[in-house]
Length: 276
Length: 300
Image (cartoon, rainbow over all chains, first blue to last red; front, side):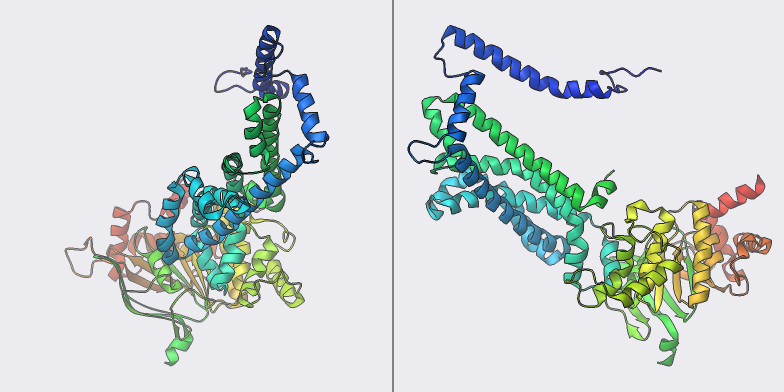
């Protein structure tokens, strides 16, 4: 019996074909862009909407490797640094808060009753809608931006990690008690290590949202950052900067996701195997 | 009371109801030191409920539970437990799983894994006893089901609990491994002089491992006539000393054992409950699955 290569339930693409298939959508996207850009540029060489690769490379060179005339900084790197700092603070605060709250919510029925409805309520609040409130109450400094990322990611993290805690069989808790464990020992030695892999996966999921809130906050009130730059040069229709910036953000997000997955695999080998 | 000291488990007139539904009714039981008490019963008769009560996960509606002279409140180190599944902690290696009790109960659980040699020697001694001293750095997912249960036994034993509770510990294993572990458990019980409360739904297993056989069932006929009642709690309907039968670990190969099983199955444990066993089969054809499989094997 021969398996089809590509189509159908029983298809088993060989390795090389798999690689090609993986690349295909990217190739199509890039060639469509190049073709459209070529069409517009032959029509009007000063067109700014779909810049050529070379003009984008020039723009990258300008922002990444030449000092800015006004501030004397390398724009891309300072923007990246300040954006990542905000993202890091926001997501880490959210992660640690969510971890603690969901551990206690998952293990103590009383705390679950106290907080679960509230956490669900908070998670329904559209973070961007309270952005003005944040800027008014916390000022336009760093705190408001970090708070927005926190509010956007913390409830989802809490709910997801809470579910992970709930999935731990009751038998394990009884077992730990018969091994003489205190409740603190159960939380930090039995439950926490088991939910960490899942919690890191949750972080991978909310990072996308984190970027969204970061860029939104930077677009509205900031003096640097990747989102700030994109919305600044938008005024001059500088697509040659915007497109590389967007690709850069995508690349950063992809790298974080990859690193977290690797981290999970290295730190918790038992977890990956268990899920198979 | 002196009797409480000798009796490792002492249940006094236990009754457990969930709302209107009565699950356990009038359970009186004392398990004395060194007994391997096997409790058998059909599904839904209240075996697991009784276990939860003894563990202290739930309080009984009525009655007292006394373990080694002290009343039960919550699960604690006074009884070890081995479940059918989830007995091991997936994030810990075999050695760490066995050491866990030492670490958790020492009150220094927040410290890193101790290099304490006394503990290590003790853990290694138990691991040797369960024949796993060459697998100490493996994780539970790398072990077979039988090995996992052996680690669980070592993990529970290192706490030296007065009573070891086992809830269908070999229920998820294939027949060969299961037989192997039953023999292993008997061996361990004999050498270590353990007190074990063993719960199973398999009559053959109960007869084989137990030094004492208890049957818990909600199907009993105390009066003639109306023998079934929906709201009737499980009761211990038979209590049978098996010491004369099970005296060595080679008993399973003994033809007398098979005869004994079939007698028990055909005629009940004693005249008073003979009816019970027939009713039992009638209403719960699945209850003695292994027994039927065994029977088929003999016939073929």
